[in-house]
Each structure stands twice: as structure tokens, then as C-alpha cells.
Length: 164
View 1 (cartoon, rainbow, N blue to C red):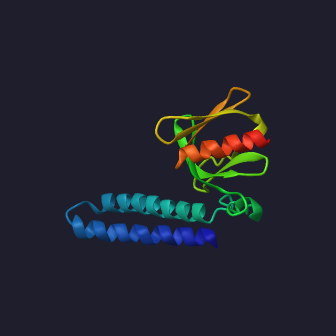
View 2: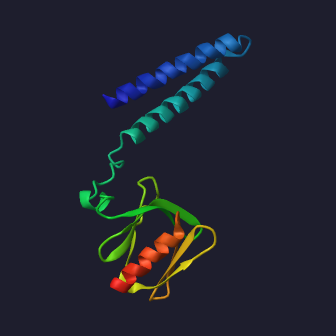
View 3: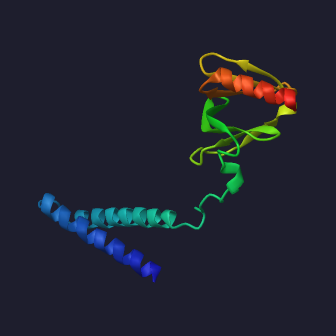
């Protein structure tokens, strides 16, 4: 059935392009118009069928539902932040969990990669230029976040590091 619909779509576009060709180019050889109409109709129908198949593809699945507790902003306070990974910044939410600092990127980021570090694994928290917050791990790795109220973030993280 699907092939019949594709065929009818191709025929409809071919006829449409042939009529348009006759209207706009009445002096042109009809054999040339038929050939161009067949080619144009096939390309248009193929593009529409591919778009339809991509839109309804089983590969495009909705994002998995996340744990309701992990998104509870009242339970895990924090704030909006951008996490720099190389030269690219992922927007998301940086939050304080009981034993770690967790960054969850927005669903529109690709690839979507969460980040976390235990308070006991943080060596230092530094203030970078402008709104940059630099978190240095005991392993030597450093992560840069852009946050509002940077000094409050530094104080809160250092307080949790001492408690850990």
C-alpha cells in the first residue's frame, strides 16, 4: 500500500510540473518538458517521502523519563549554570546533593552528558574571570562553570567540602 501512495505522489508531482512547464515555457519541445517533469516529480516525491519517514521513524524515541527526585529543585538546591566542555558550553542546572555536586544539562544539549563530583574529591574552588567558577578535583582535572552569584557558590561549595 505504501508503494502505491509513493507512486501516486510521484505521478501527481510529475503532472503538476508538466502543466507548469507548458504554462511558463510554451515554445519548448514537449519531450524536454516531459523529461524534466518526470525528474522533478521524482525528486520532489522522494524528498517528501524521506521527510515523512524520518518524522515517523522508530529511531526517534522520546528521552527517557528521569527520576522525579533528581529533578526536585527544592530538595536539591542549586541554580542555572553553563558547563564548559572544551570550547562548548552546555546549559543546565548545577545542584547540591548530599554528598556531591551534580550538573544536569538541558534536554536540548547534544550529546547530553551529566557531570558530578563528590565534595571529598574537590581539591579547590576558584573564582575565574567574569562569572566563571573553576572546580579543581584532587585528580588534577578542572571544570569551568558560568554561574550567577559566583562568590555564594564558592562559599557554599567550600562549606560542603569541610563537612565532607
